[in-house]
Length: 136
Image (cartoon, rainbow, N blue to C red; front, side, top):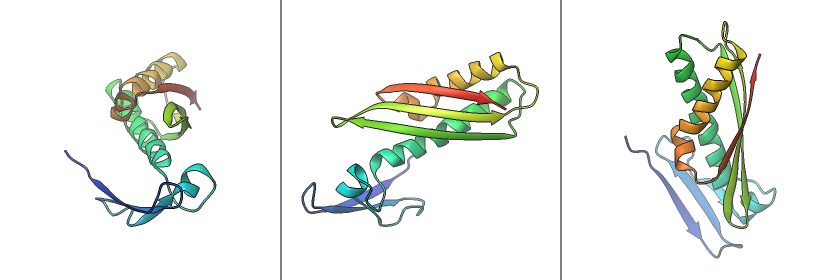
C-alpha cells in the first residue's frame, strides 16, 4: 500500500506560503505557512497532520487489539498533541477514552499501551510517546 500527498511552496520560509493536497482529496490545496505553523494563523501545518494521523492510527490499532482479545469497543475517542521544540518533534502525547464492555482496567491498560507502542505511526515517529488511557 502506498499513499501520497503533495505540497507546493512559494517564497521564503517566513514570508512564503504553501498548499497541501492528499491523494484522497480530503485536503485539496489546503493552505499552510509560517503563521499557521508557529502562530495562530489560518491553515494547517505538518504537526497538526501528524497529530491527526497518530490519533487515527492509534484508535484503529487499539480497536483491533481489543477485538483480538474478544472485546468490542463501543466508543474510542483519542486526542494527540504533538510538541515541536527547536525544530524537532519531541513528544507525541495521546489521550484516549474508551467504552469497552466487560474488560478489566488491567486488560484495557495493557491493550492501550500495546497500541501506543505498535501502531504504525508510533513506530515511524522518532520522539517520546506518552499515553493517558481512561476506561469509562
